[in-house]
Image (cartoon, rainbow, N blue to C red):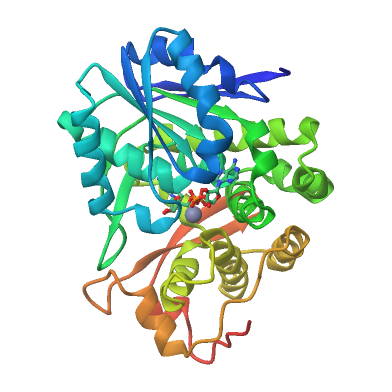
Length: 363
Ligand SMILES: NC(=O)c1ccc[n+]([C@@H]2O[C@H](COP(=O)([O-])OP(=O)(O)OC[C@H]3O[C@@H](n4cnc5c(N)ncnc54)[C@H](O)[C@@H]3O)[C@@H](O)[C@H]2O)c1
Ligand SMILES: [Zn+2]
């Protein structure tokens, strides 16, 4: 066991710590006990994660006097469904789950969103603990309390805000994460740097390869800084009325690309990478973002192995994908642009202004 760091998410009486460490997974039991007071716990996971880490988590919980059981759902985005939530409600209640029980999510963002949604709704809400194992979950989805599932009409359209009592984050788990998934999470790391922290952006420019090699002296501080940024944004704006919208940098076009590709073959972070480069160039041509910013972001993303050009679809396809959840075509979208590296702002734009005539899409 090596260095540890605690980042506090300040939300009044719903405040909670993110306990960041390297190889401290075995020590989570007492912290879960303290944070939830639970006598019983369900550890929800997927096979690739569960087979590597669940037994250590269960043992630690049991040693702390918590009756813990493991519940596995199929790996992949399709598990974020009402059907899977329903199966978990039944299984948990059958196992004797009550309001004094806690739910732990052990896995990436899929497990976190699904288990969090079940925790938010089962018995009108039970204590929830996040144990993120993908980089994306560590730096983004495990912090902030957004939970949810997908329905036919789209992703994350059903959900609830339900803050965890504790986030237990062991960066050692990244050692088994597939490289493409690591790069996927790095997109959100670059996003945090671009909108919030120019020094972090420079740090990434210096040591992104060490980060990708999982050099422990680099991983822990970078993950911790990202948790701080997400925590700070969420503390200021839990429900996305203001500053939290800045986290959507790169997501307007990123989401459009994901939708146009039918959510196949493109990971979220890859779509966001393309969307960030687009947004930075768009910011430059609107005179908001200093020239050269987009090229700098693109260069960093290329070193990570992330794509920087949006897939080729007709402009009208992007127009309708960008405006998809807007009732009226003349409605403006809060487009996130960079005032400079490390500082973002929202600009209300029409879809036609976000994707102006003669925009070329490559890739
Ligand atoms: N709630 C939020 O605020 C929020 C924010 C961003 C994204 N999300 C959601 O997060 C989801 C994506 O999360 P994700 O990228 O973590 O995907 P994921 O949960 O599917 O994990 C990616 C893959 O990596 C595997 N994996 C995870 N950790 C591993 C480890 N340590 N070792 C080996 N394999 C491991 C998983 O089994 C999976 O196959 C999406 O559903 C997205 O909507 C939510
Ligand atoms: Zn994202």
